[in-house]
Image 1: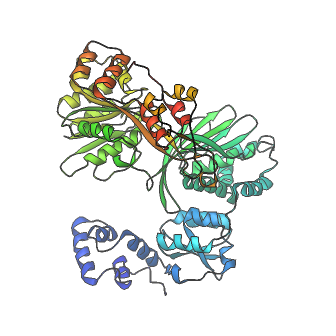
Image 2 (image 1 turned 120 degrees about the horizontal axis):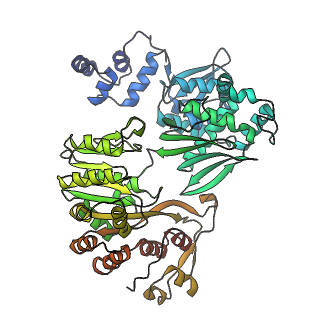
Image 3 (image 1 turned 180 degrees about the horizontal axis):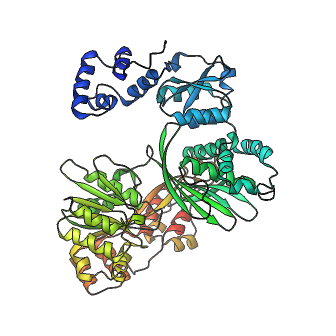
Length: 584
């Protein structure tokens, strides 16, 4: 298809492509004169076309041709010029060689100019873009790339050949100038092999649904690990000489100060890896042997924020629904770091997110952007703490407030005051169980009468790995294991009672587990619990009452039920929960 002149307007391109009618264009132009917004955004708002249609039209407007990948046969020699991992990472596919020896590449996002720069660095040739869409590019990649992608180890070998021996550091190679000179660091970060290694690591992390990537420097080694379902797994052990180059590349991606290696740095970056929209939080830390780097990954296309999908039992879900639909009060979600507290809060907010309710959140950081929520980012470096942000939020007349975390007495007091003035407040706090949350608030010097007047419920949670269905092996536990788990007598008396073990198979990368599920205990703060708070009762007394009178299941009991249902294993139950013998 012939390209369209750059002088042609985006509206005319869309009309010519048959995406909109001339009448729809006239209406959009009239709306644009009133709003002053971009024409493409106005067209999408009016639902005359899709956002992808606008992107494709913008590419055509810049002189790119529009291609139909599903009807195109691509030559094998062209495909071999772009490795499969590069095509998958950038969501592109080569379609033919250009006259100058370069490549014409179909792009799902024709406006991503940095993508073209990266490809030219990696492939070492001139790249010309052609316009396609996400679906067609994905289908074309799957149908054309039947051979294996380059491995990390192969790419590392290529880079080691350039940088030096695996057992040597940059200092030993006489490259101290590389470390000290910012220009050299930038040049090092743009080495095609360095770009490719970082891309391969991020692609593997996204494909395996990892939550974190850890790059760690030690005295004699440098290693890269992924956190999968809460457990770290080493994927590659690069030579230590590559540490500076790989961390420098990550800093470039995250727009961090590449020359600052003495102080910790934090940044956030949004990337499109394949067809997934990824938020990455990057944190570097100077250590004794060099800079370590951790990248926390949030795949916005994969995160589950639906209460029905988080593993709640029917009874626990009913109690939670009763609490979050109260007109005012405080709900606290508690558990260690990485136990899914924020996901549970987001799921609650999604349940409450209606046009009649104004919901404002204050978070550090904002992990997920949710439509129709007013979300505020805490910035302690400029004095915007949780407490300071919360004071301003209450002047915005919200109905529901979410506080990312109650860290101190000041935040706790403002949260309680907000609930007492008619707001529903949702927040997190760090304790090991629901009853211990009461003790934690008292230890923070929150007055007991304020707790009883505001607190409606506490949800404690953990995440357990789900056993791989393809390789799970049923077995009947012996008496010692049943005693250790606290298996109830009625289960022991059942001759068909069995648990499962994880074995490992290709489907789960021989780990034995795939995915995670939540386990929960929920404390309903009723009148008796309020009296116990005023009397400063111990946490075990509150737990004993809640189990006996409210029917509260502890996290150990919830975990054991899931083990009995063959969702998880006894090992996970023992690793993540504590057994309480309250004589019940």
